[in-house]
Image (tube, rainbow, N blue to C red):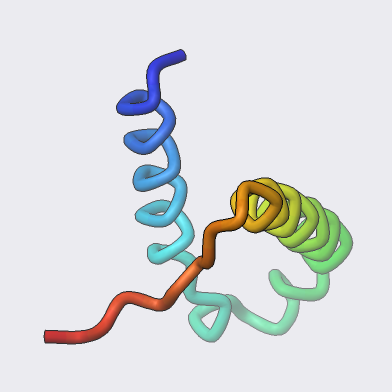
Length: 68
């Protein structure tokens, strides 16, 4: 997979996550989905940490973009 394809997929994932608003879920729905949501969030955290560690291992910094 090309670098451009990877970046497009990452941007699509960010966009999809941006659409998630658990405050709009009913308490019942959140309770029903909590186990699955927790597993997804833990997996996402682990994957993000792995990617970030790979960048840092190359001697580069991950910096938050400066708002213009």
